[in-house]
Image 1 (cartoon, rainbow, N blue to C red):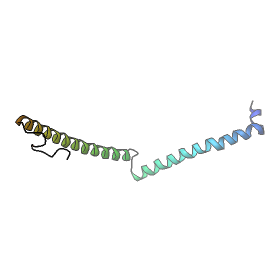
Image 2: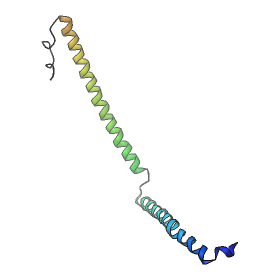
Image 3: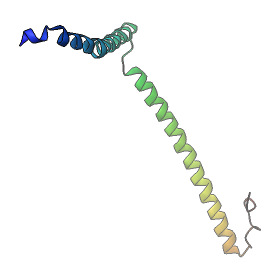
Image 4: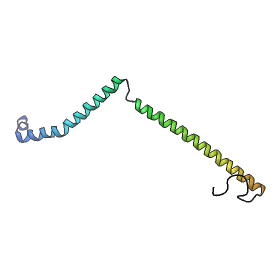
Length: 102
């Protein structure tokens, strides 16, 4: 069996396959290992960047919540003002609040 693998017509494609497929995979693994070692030397954990992104996203979510709360409160104020003007019998557009279409 091993005699067949050592024949040039079999050994050539095997070496070619190794050069084309295995060498780039090994190079990627070594590059990754080097980057991880550099991060460890700098004192950064791999999760530090992820934590920063999560903190940034949390602050954005808090800002969106505040904006939505303000928007809902303004809408409620408008509805209250509109219902009060309707209860008083004031024609639409004549009561308090912004002009229609503004």
